[in-house]
Structures are given as structure tokens and as C-alpha cells.
Length: 297
Ligand code: HSE
Image (cartoon, rainbow, N blue to C red; front, side, top):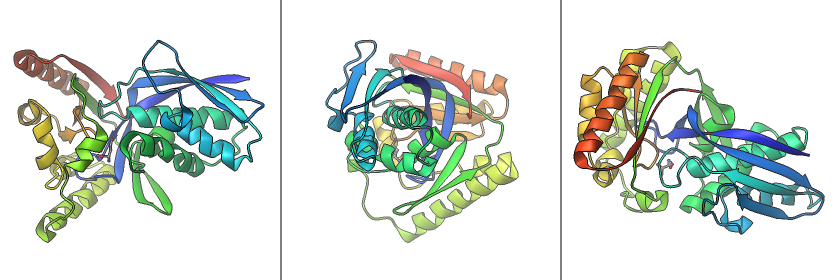
């Protein structure tokens, strides 16, 4: 009685939509193997020797299952084998993929007892383990697919947004940025003039997705609040962004809390050219990286 699911990476924030927008990628993905147990325990294993906490309360897949089991009056338990392919601290939703994959697989074993919204609610306990706070902008797209707007997390209000047929280029420079640290450095107050720009961009981006207006999407991929602070942690950020746009990308920015950078393109050939220039930039800087050309899933 076990099941295996692919839990894909996600791009949170989509530049202007800090904590409220995210999209699901085709790859990379974690593979989560979950087995139903008849006693209320959660067992965690790493498949390939990847060092992961095995205490369920401290594991991003374990904590959500602990909550799920509580809601099932401790009538069952789960064993989870994690095949970790999305590196923690990459900015492409590594913790969310494990959290979401675990609850989706567990729910399949329970014959879909819980709604998708319930699953997001459980999976957010994994984000709390990973970054200290609950946020759903990686989890919701991982569970729903496509592009999602998280209008609110208390109470949960998730809106799926039609996703245009776009290519996504992601570069993951091999440094680790912990989401908790990348949140710590943010200012707690925002100037009204910046807020006006930001909500104009968020509304423009959502309208652009819904109308399939690529120019509007490109114009709206601007972040005047978070990016100026966080981009300092990412070597080569400004150059990657500028050259990607010159090569024809619609726009992009920091993926989640970084250090990955994503760019959206209409054509596959543009997305590939963007990947190449990203590789050239990091070769020159002397930083290892992984580059993906993929699509919205
Ligand atoms: N919205 C979160 C942040 C996503 O930017 O901190 C983390 O992946």
C-alpha cells in the first residue's frame, strides 16, 4: 500500500508578488514515496543518502504529515522515502516540493479524503519548519499546478490563474541562501509610493496572464520592494537580468528567496539562448550552476 509521486519545483513571488504569487515548473522535481501504516507514527528516510532531518517534526515532509495524522485522530501513520532532487536553499521550492508531495501522496492513499485546500493547509507546516513562517506561494502552485494567487493564508483563499504557454529558464548558482535569512534582511515598512508601484505591477501581471498579453506581463515583472534588497546576495544578478531581456526574454527576477533566477520567454529558442548566456556569465564569475529550460506545468 504505497505510492510514488513527482513533486515539482516552483517559482514563488513572480517578482512583484511577494508571498502571494507562484508558478509550477515541469522540472526539477523530488520523488516522494509514501506508505500507509496502521499505527500513528511518521517515519522519514532519505533515498539517496542526501542528509535530511529524520525527526518528523523537523522535516519539511514530516511536519505536514504529523498534522494530517492528528486530524485523522491518530488512526494511521506514514512512512516516507524522499528522493531529493531539488536542492534545499535553491529558491525553487525545495521544502515545498517535499511537503506538498508528501501530503498529496498520503491523501491518495486515503482515497482523497482531504481537499486540495486542506493539503495546502497541512503542507504549510513544512514551510514553517523550513523558513520559520507559513507561506503558500510555493506549496499552492505545487499542489494546484499552473499559476496561483494566494489572496490570503488566514483564512486560506487560493485563486488559480490561467497560465500562458511560456518557457521558463532557471539558473541555480551553487550557493545556498536560506529563506529564513533572506526574509530577515527585509525592511518591515514600505513607502506608500513603492506600494503603489508594486500593487500596480501585481494587478498588471495577473491581468497580463489572464489576457495572455505578453507585453503587459513583461512590463509588470518589476519589484521595487524586495529585489533591491535580496539581489545583493546573488552574484551576477543584474547582468543576468539585463542580458536576458536583451536576448528577448519577457522578464523575470529572483526565484523565491534566491539564489536562483528565472526568466520567462515566449519562444523555446529564446529560453535556450537565455540559458546559454546565464551559463556564460557564471563561467566568467567562476561559480558552478545548474540551468533548466522548462515550461509552466
Ligand atoms: N515568498 C517566499 C519568500 C518564498 O520570498 O520568502 C520562499 O521560497
